[in-house]
Image (cartoon, rainbow, N blue to C red; front, side):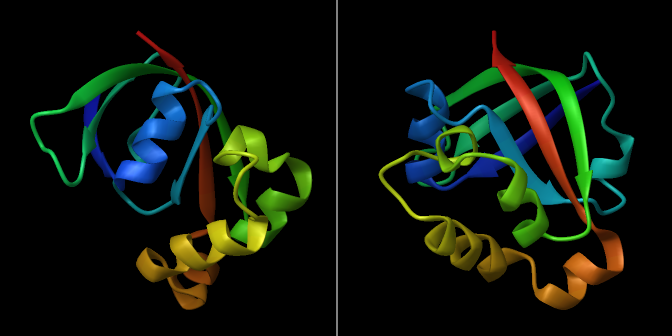
Length: 113
């Protein structure tokens, strides 16, 4: 299956630069359908004509973002130039603590195609 996801430019570039290898999302109904081997088209949120594709090579379930960030270095989840606190703050702009509690969160291990 093929999916599309938008990324903020900063995080879009982290993946292209090779630092971010795990995309983090809410484990809602849309993401519950993702399986190993699926393809995701990541679209730059500020320049929708810029995109790349990646293959899903791993799926990681957690109760919330804080739990996930305990298990992984920031360099895999974003880039070592930012803090885990900033990453959580950015994620919580889109996914509230209540939504995290309701659905849980998903780390999607990706490999650029």
